[in-house]
Image (tube, rainbow, N blue to C red):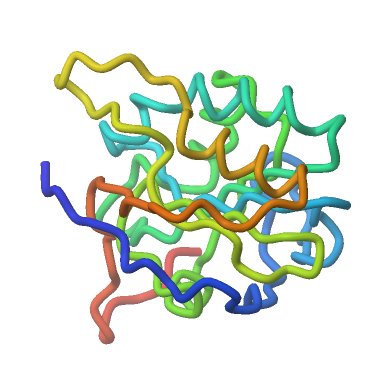
Length: 192
């Protein structure tokens, strides 16, 4: 498995808008329609990546814990599903149900949203404030598959708590690490 770090988009960046298929509901949803009152966590994930599988239970737990506090979670998969069939929209829906995701799991068919966010890996995390300005980007915590560190969500929790307390962004933000996003080649067909 490739170990690709996130690009660390500049803090204060406005969240790029999107309107994508929610694979669970079958509806198209926009960032505006599913953002949180106090903050929004946008995650680039996929089905097949071992780094994502490693943190899925914690993602489901955090979304449930912080929803009542005004923080919404949104997951996006931008992988090339022609060459990575496990990441297809049908299997995204199945995965979301099996993992207990209460948040939208969106399919970025053209990969334009991942490019707008400069997403590089799965998982890649972004926390935006109520005005959709970037407050935190980077890792969920120090746990990785096989390193023996339990998944805690510590870095993301610290960032969310700072946001909710009207504090400054965490000073030290470490890049996320995971599998590279599987980019389509320009001449490949788009999955239908």
